[in-house]
Image (cartoon, rainbow, N blue to C red; front, top):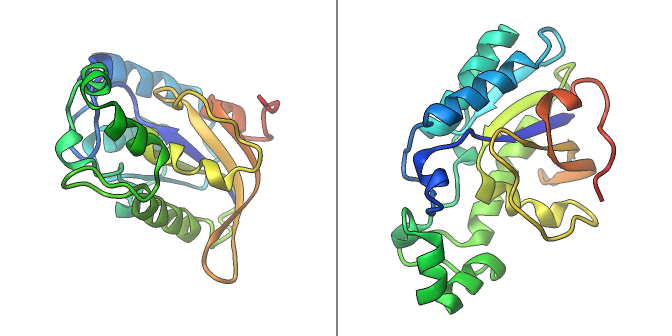
Length: 209
């Protein structure tokens, strides 16, 4: 099953370089433009389903795509962004300067949870469980999944040979050919990082790595 995992369009917190987790922030004007442009490049009839995180920025990104593809827009709670607790909404550069050790742990230690937040391990577990649920049935075409940059970064350990690097861009995608393993986990057979969603409708684009 091909899952095209799209990061939502831009929000004001993205533009101001602030942490954005489960705060329910809508798209800004640029984000709405990105979502519409992305949708217009998709081909109706080549997609099986459109799913999204229930957060407004993901739902708003999914809406023009679902309209274009004439498919129902469905939400799945496991696709939410990682919960960052007290860090949510803070300026990234200021946080890096004032709390370098906490930032390092947030980015590199999957067992670390910021105050009031969620560990990387817990966020990845629920995110992968949601993807495994979507991959569990052959629907006759790729599934477009609107989600968030933080949880996409947590997917890296499932992508053999995926290097560390920048977060996926707004309205850009991680595409995985995946199957649901007998134990219910997700097994990735092929992947691409930070690609245009429409490039994944028929075959995989050239490998970036």
